[in-house]
Length: 89
Length: 116
Image 1 (cartoon, each protein chain N blue to C red):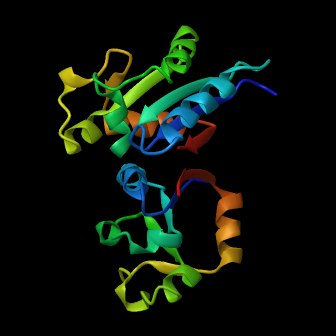
Image 2 (cartoon, each protein chain N blue to C red):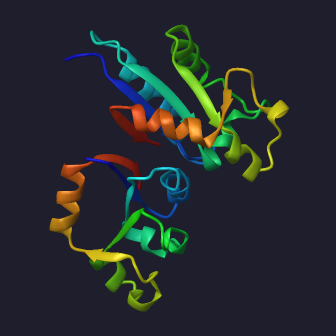
Image 3 (cartoon, chains in turn blue, purple):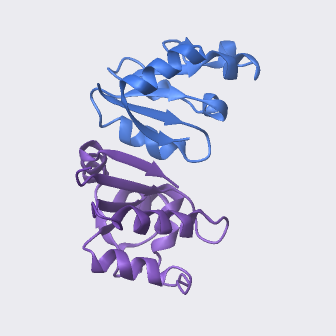
């Protein structure tokens, strides 16, 4: 059970900056959050997910940083239920 | 229900939306009631604009007064001030300036984190 940062675009940056300080952070880019640049987490222990549906319908599949894992809504619910949500979405 | 530790993050600039007051109203709401939950209000990113001395606070002073009377902390993130070009001496006295690390510790230690 760690901290799950839900990040959208309008003020998601505030959450991403905090997640950088959080060794066990998991981040989910949701809705327009998939536009936010997650490369800062490349090679770090922070696990970054993006909601697959939000990525596909915005045509961003090959624009998302490589080690971002795409998840569907069932997996998102599991993450939300299994962690303390820190919402910036 | 035991007393809970709640952080309310304020991420939006004043007057462009209703969030700058609604967040404070929610914070007051969290502290009221039998459990007298502990709340800290944290200004981040564009939220830092609300802490500037010149902001007209006639529609928020009541909430700020209530929160301070109950010992709730109202803090603004130092890095956000810097990123927005706000000098520390331009911050109104009601707001405590703290580091991003301390903001993270507040959030990490909270039972619930609500964003506005």
